[in-house]
Amino acid sequence: MEKSSGSTSSVVFYNNSTGEKIQDVTTGATKVFLNLDEEKQDKTALYTKTRMFENICTYSMSFILSFIIGYSFTSYLLIADHGLRDYSQGFFEESHNFFKNLCPAVLYFGSTVGTFSMLMIKRYSHLIVTQLTAIIFFIGYLLQMVYPHVLVIFLARFLIGLASGIACMIIPQILYFSCKENIRGLFTSFFPFFIMVGLTTAVALMPLVTNQIYNFFNLIPILLSILSLACSLGSFKLLEVKKEKAFIEVTKFMFSSTALKSTVSVVLAHVFQKTTGVDFIGNFSGSLFTGDNAQIKSLSPLLTAGIVNLATGLLPDLFGRKLPIIVNLCLIFLVTLSMGIWGTNVVSLILFTIVYNGGLGAVPYYYQNETVPSKYIPDINEIATFSNVLLALFVAIYAAFLLSPTNTTIWYTFSGLSLLGAFIMGITMPETKGTPVEKRDFIKNWFNFSFKNKNLK
Image (cartoon, rainbow, N blue to C red; front, side):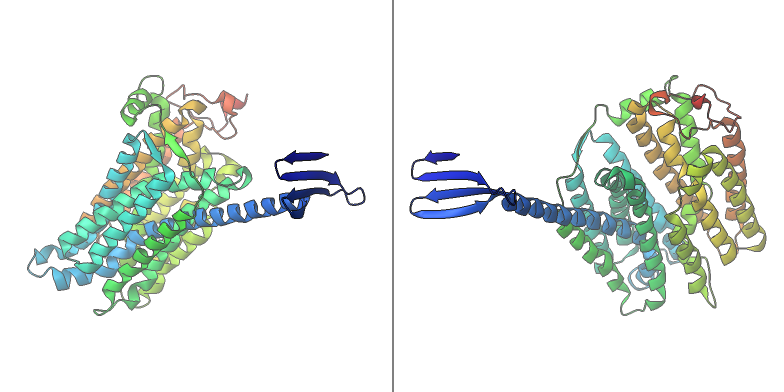
């Protein structure tokens, strides 16, 4: 078959022996033979390489920001002591220890503001938001490094918390929607995994802190923020989010009579997740032990948590939602009670991390998507996310006032609340595992004693 146009003509024919498709192109005095099948393969290979590069950039950007979030939780211990001593002399010196313990609360206040701002915005780009997050992290850590006066540290912690809150809203969505459906659970679990890696890294660096180099520990997240920005430039086009309803409208509906039981149940699941003390252990893990082998004792629970974190959804997948959360709350009651009686010890903290990651850490996030009709899942997720961050702020403030090597009141508090949580969830929480999408509905009753999913009948 021959085609011509002006001084250009082409003939397309097939090689019967190989099945290849050949195009004979003549342009003016130049004659070129093109193998169309090879050309198509080259384009496919180029697309695959480009897509692979974009995926690597997207995942690297997400994992780096997750690491910075975790690093932020405990990195204040790397600079707070020195900043208070060297830059804050004469500024309420009798309260310096309290100021140091208050740093996590300031960070969580920033996280609350960041989360709430994302909930109020009706339209945004995942890519632009992640780039903005990296810039805010950069500014926060740069402030800490340049002039770590206590007031500057508080401002920096607020900015770092602001970026953390925004990132915690965005990164799980990026990981979930940018990979194949059959590995979404695995990729989403990398988000808390890299948070744990960052948290553990900050604690591991503490023995290296000296008067001469303590400021340079801020360089780690500063350089990582720049690297994250560089990765974002190679990322593929991420989701553009456009919400139909603002957060205020969502809140009004989710606390109306129709959705109230589901909303209260989901919020309670997050309340009793936080009142186990998991954030307290994460934030203050670097200062729970003193004396010989303090570093090893501090790192042991974190390393254990990092290992078991990737399997956090195993028990809920096997035994449902209700049984794991009740059993784990009862076990945490015993573990935290033991620390109230005998004091903080590394064995109990390791047991805590194993029990917590055995199901309690994952259950609220599965459960909240199964207690409402599918079209209301984004709404309940917004309520749950905000309540989770707000509760973390309350726990951090409470811990700032009670943290002391000899004060065991905080462990008795977590122990009592865990037992209360086991009882309340035991009588109110319905089993939702395996509910088909078309059968998902709002919770009908305030009391649900059964461990069987009634929606499967």
